[in-house]
Structures are given as structure tokens and as C-alpha cells.
Length: 266
Ligand code: 15L
Image (cartoon, rainbow, N blue to C red; front, side):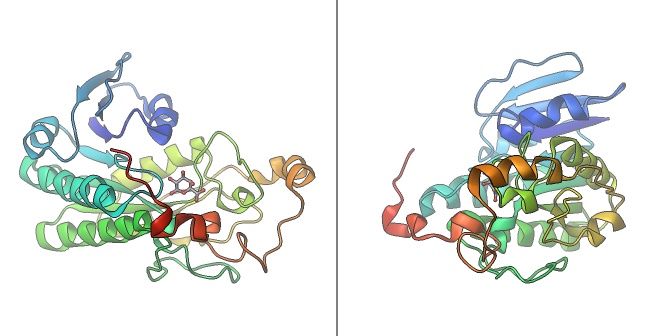
């Protein structure tokens, strides 16, 4: 089995590489930044918006894990080109190459302006908090289109916060441990149909449903609570009634990401 990972040099890609390695499996690592392949790995340096390069990169691939693109807020033109057009190119390349399974990295920021009230259900209606969040909503829609029209199996992961460990008290709720992330990807590359699944660990303070994840075979094992005492001592007890804790997207909902405050980087 060969899995193509786009954005393989990024944070989540780097955490997943050792965790997705298996006997008899090849990880094809694609990024605009050159990646040094290890045993059981291949490397492709390419831009996800380059259609020819992406079709070529899909050769012999059974599943695509699409992590490529900006992982935070950027000006509209950058988001449009890299995140939205890039995801279209990836899906279209998968279709042309006959790849069956595509896993799309969506984000909690697709629904970031929802207030935090109890446990949010699966398939929470879009309420993006940024242009970045809009690109995740669009990517979920593109995945839906490529599933319904062309029969690709597509799973969109509304990832919370995937880091080695939670970095603040919001992440006590939103943390997806690297090991659980790998478990979620394993379940997703085997799933049939179209799914939108929360990417979150079995955190005691979790805000999001695990039902749809469990329906595709994801069983998270980690709980951020082991980090709670330390983080609360550092940052204080989070107040669910006030920003950044009152909205799902946390600080992404704040005025620092208003359009006038964004600067073009490319
Ligand atoms: C995301 O979607 C970002 O890619 C990541 O950098 C984190 O900020 C995460 O969301 C989060 O909400 O913690």
C-alpha cells in the first residue's frame, strides 16, 4: 500500500510519519520544501497547485492524506490559491489517477464562530472564523462533490489542536494527540463513503462528539487531563463565558485576524 501525504514537511505531517510507518507500506512524502525520505518512504518536491505534478505524484497511490496548505489565517488571495485551489487540484488529480481514498485535513476553524455549548454534534453547520476556516468549509464541500459525482471515498477531519502536548487551557478541550491522530488517519483511509469527523482525543474536557469518528473505527486513547494541573497553574482556570474560551475557534475569532490586520507573505 502506498499513501501520498501532502504537506508532509509540516507540523502534523512530521508527527505522523513515524506513526503511519508499517511493514509493506510506502509513504510518499510531498511538499514544496524538500523532505529527506527514510526507510519505507519516497519524497516528491512539488506544489499542490501544480496539476501535472500532482497527477504524477498520485501514480501507484492507494490513499491520499491531504495536509498541504496554510495552517493558519492568511490574506484571501493566498488562501484562495493554496488552500482552496490546491485542494481542488489534489482531488482532481486523485480522480484522474484513479485513487479511491482521500483524507482531507479540515479544522475546527470551519465552525469556529459557534458558541461553546455542551458537546457539539457531528456535522456541525459551517460557521468559519477566518478565511482559513472558509477554505476548510470549501474543502469539505469539494470532498463531498468528488464523493457524490466520482465515487471517491472522502473523510474530512475537523482537527482540533494536534501537537505533542496541549499548549494552553483551550487545548485541554481541543487536543488531538499525535498517536490519536495516527489512529484517526488509519480509520479514515479505510473508510468508505463521505464523512466529516472531529479530530479530537478522548479528553475529559472535550467539546466535540466522537460518535462519527467511532462509526468509522476511530477509538481515541489519550486524554489531555494529564496536563491540566500544570496548564491551569500557568494560565489559570479557563472562563467558558468569555473569549477566547466562549467560541469554538478560540483566539482565531479575535480582532487581530480582521482583514485589515493581515499582511501578504508570499
Ligand atoms: C488549526 O486549524 C491550526 O492549523 C493549528 O495551528 C491550531 O491553531 C489549531 O487549529 C487550533 O485550533 O488549536
